[in-house]
Image (tube, rainbow, N blue to C red; front, side, top):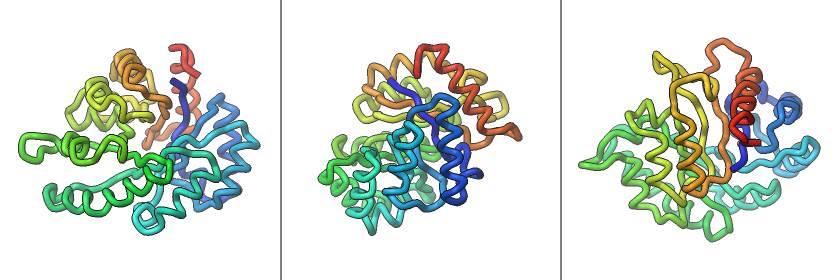
Amino acid sequence: MEIGAQLFTVRDFCKDPSDLATTLARIADIGYRHVQVSGTCAYEATWLRDELLKNGLSCVLTHTPAARIQEETDSVIRDHGVFGCDYIGLGYYKFEPAEEKYREFCEKYAPAAERIAAGGKYFMYHNHAGEFQKLGDKTILARLAEDFPAEHMGFTLDTYWIQVGGGDPAAWIEKLSGRVPCIHLKDYAYGQKMAVVGEGNINFDRVFAKAEDAGTKYMLVEQDNCNGEDPFDCLKRSYAYLKSRGFS
């Protein structure tokens, strides 16, 4: 498994192409070799390809605007082909009210997910805490795994949000084995506080072991809220922790 940086962590430094280019260079300087592009300014696929190449980086996953996934599916597939990214991600969906929104999600994304698979890419859904509410006797996350074929949709499981939702991050990675090529590493500290990886309370040794067994390729560091600290420093400390555990 390899590690990367989720650019949503540094979204405030990615508001125009010039800043995004500088940010990519800073991420590479920390030591990361992979990124997820999310929460940034708009960009041309060829521009991103060239900036990644310039910095020795690869984009392994995106969070792509919902409207583009649904309405411009073929264009999204082509763009990801240009900058060499296999995983097309949706970052958030609000399942409230749960039954109604669940049906709506399936209607909206099942066709796109199938088309993405036919185009040689893989649709990835990123959880928050809301997916751990129950529909009947099962969580929304479990229902999604049942109702979408494994070959059409994977899951970018987020360790922090699983914990907030009352789940066990390592157990969910194991449960969704084969469908988690990318996961988000985000630590959980007292007070439901997001923390640098290794500085909170999640048992990451279990997460790493289960991710390895589940076929995870990329573990992407994300910290939506750095609690007033420099987000680049937070990414650097997470990188140092992961490197001490043998990852690069």
